[in-house]
Length: 221
Image 1 (tube, rainbow, N blue to C red):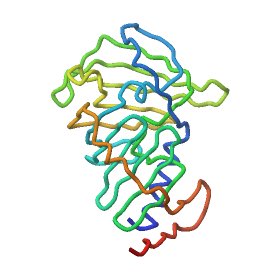
Image 2: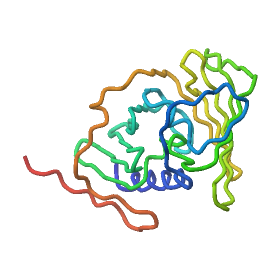
Image 3: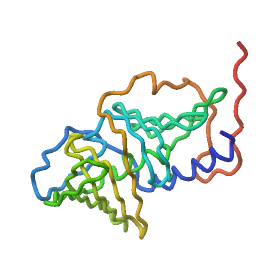
């Protein structure tokens, strides 16, 4: 991937991070009609999986995504990106280069969004069949604890045969709606080696920084 593509990816990830970060807690009881919490339940409840994601802010198409605890990986044609969901760092790793960013890849949205927001969760009585999965419908409303004028609404299609994994997620915020769909879902823990990355990488562009990423040459063998 060239520096221009990396720059575009960073811009996308910055947009996805307008209200980012995450927290992890045990999966809550979903029997109540409505309740309030202060976490993004996607990160709290689905800590290991692999799937193919389509749509979202990154406008992905059938992209492979993996999660294991605090790590999330997305595969690209000639590289892959590893995201630390605790620190929100991201490493873009190719055959001959590695670039490190201080923002996660846009494909990790909405798992990395709405940390420390008030969350109102409402389980509905509706059921829909999506891609052969019978799904229960749940709606979430995220509002900040301070006076920021941000409200995000999320609708989850939770597949009963996948322990409630949301195979479709609609997020509405700021007059825009983003839909992410997940296929070929496995809840098994991915191979830990998938999340490996070099200890030191070339620093990528910071928010608001102009220019291009100058890739460091591989060390001589």
